[in-house]
Image (cartoon, rainbow, N blue to C red; front, side, top):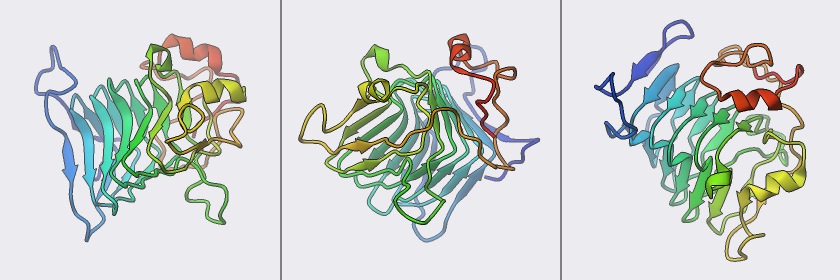
Length: 239
């Protein structure tokens, strides 16, 4: 799927009047031998926006909106690159990583989901890892105004794997506030730890020429809840 910044490809419900978040199953990627690409697409009203099984696609500059789950990554050979997307308003979860999947998430804006990242069954997604020389997995995700107050979490690690989630902005500058919205070994020692430190004190300034847009205090997309405005200062920019 290859859209452009000026003309994205849209996948959505057949029902324009009363669409539901599972009106169709979603896009399934099961191609371990060739890397698939989804670039500049809007995916709405699906059960799974994208279901990735034992494949490693490149998913960039997309909007995952009002699905049951935005992205499901499954299988030990799944190492998808998920970069520069807006993942929002998915009723059951922004991203599921299960059964050994290891997707890499960078430069994503993740807002108004139930659980942002759900991890189980030996999966180990990389949300940000500053321990190596590569800059391709440095995080820079902005995780804002999601709904852990309803009983779920920004990251819910139900896997024994230790999870790297460094160098992201979590909507607060307080370590305790970030930790309170993460379920990991500190809540139950049968699960792995989520390493979110160091974390960003503001939304990252990244240099993505092919990004989904510019987020600033005086230019907030209309679909973002107004409560988010209180968290944005004049220096908070997502390119």
